[in-house]
Image 1 (cartoon, helix red, strand yellow):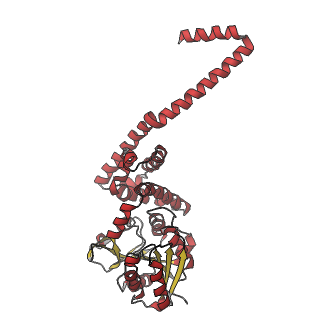
Image 2: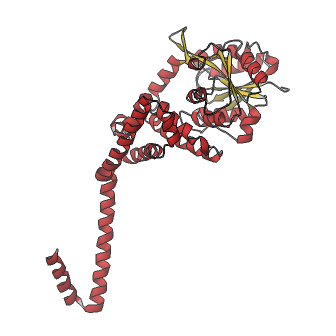
Image 3: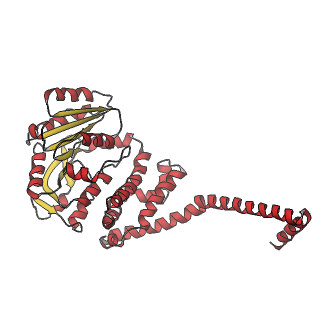
Length: 385
């Protein structure tokens, strides 16, 4: 396909129930199929998803199929980006769907503003057709049609970066390629280390006051109930560690406080993740090994210990109290780890080390002064102690 304006990447895994509605919603975009490249990545589906994809592919020349073994959502999106040729890149999950004018509105906003990223509102779908809009609604306090965000200290930017879903936006492909931003693979919560640095790197971001994505919440909730809850829990800590590393690699250290703020305001409070971690509830709740617990608690403690003072200045009173509670939990947890886990290991190793030293000292004394003198010296030392 020659010079598409948008490349839409649709990872698919066992989505036969929703896939037809999803693909129809992107095929029927008012932008027009001549301006739209649709890259479908079949991620090792074992149901009828591949047959549905092939039927659409036979009918539409702007569909590209990548058929791969199951590698997970992050890998599927990365492989889709490698095949993309459009000016902008968009992502669509195979159990969700789009309003028919979503891409036209996002593209017009991006072109008019010159923004590298165009974002729209996201509407959740639950139990059929019940919808409610929560993502980004709070940005439009005066019913503006759109807002252009250029200042990273703007309160609206700090609100925007909390919403790291990748699906309700389009982003210039050249912008992504220049910075070599990719999704982490084999991890949940993979949107965070992809979207966060892109938001921080963008010169400006246009946000439109229109719903551009329908997110089917019920199916994802069911999915999260059957997947490995332990992995889902551990992965948020791994993802935050990766995100901090990406920010440093991209030379964005001056904005670390924004990620600190987002972690305190959003990622940690969700499902009481850090309280479960630092209070050790997570060990029983998620059947963690001691090493797994030490690993995630060290990540959490490191984040809390190194929160930038700028982040604290941007917190409201409630979040300041929450942050102080986390600091107290970190101190308590560190002390408990020493006394109950890490401390026992340390004390054992320390005792072995001292015994070795005493043994070598005794051997030297025997060699230099004889066995009788060494025994007498040892007995005298025992009496003194």
